[in-house]
Amino acid sequence: MNAARLIAMIGATTGVAALLLQFGLMYGSMTAESVAPAAVVWRYLGYFTILTNIFVAVIWIRALLRPDRSMPRLEAAGGVSIVMVGIIYHALLASRWNPQGLQLVADFTHHTLVPAMFLLYWLLRPHGQLKWTDALLLVVWPLAYCPYALMRGAVDGWYAYFFLDPRHMSVAQLITSITGLSAVFLACALVVIALDKIVAKRASVGVVAAT
Image (tube, rainbow, N blue to C red):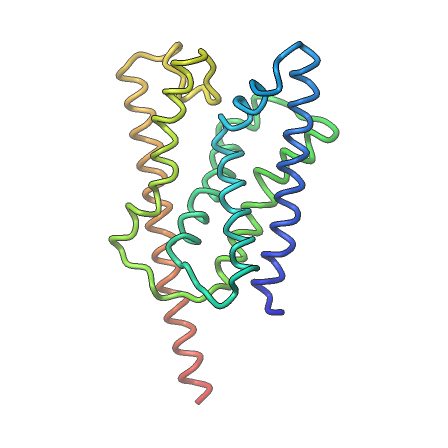
């Protein structure tokens, strides 16, 4: 078993366990307040962090089931989104709360461990197939989340993130927030593509040198 596949196995196991743990914690706390189970699921699937951790867990599981089939754009898209989960959390959200116990375990896994493991996994995968024009494709996932979050909030009045909460922002501020986030995600996508090209070039030079 190569290193990338080993990381995929560990990452998928760890990531799925953390997702189940987080759901269990939410279920326990929300149903204790007489919230219906269906509403717990609805709230759980409102977080970009949760959705993206599910996304990369699926990528890892697919890689384990189909090791012969490479999907560089899908994996790069997962890499961009999960790395940004870590960056945005530590830059904007971590200071706003202080998780303890099992919640701290879930929090650390979702926002720090899984992003780091997926980045390492991606770096160990085959490279050289990404094009600069793929940058827009790599940010479809986070860009699609914005209207999803706003539509959900319009239905139940709950918004997962303060920077996407129109109740406390003007239309201009909301547009600025979404535009800024989109620009950061796009910049991350361009960095990922640049890394793809650098790693592929170094690998080809190493092959030439070895021969």
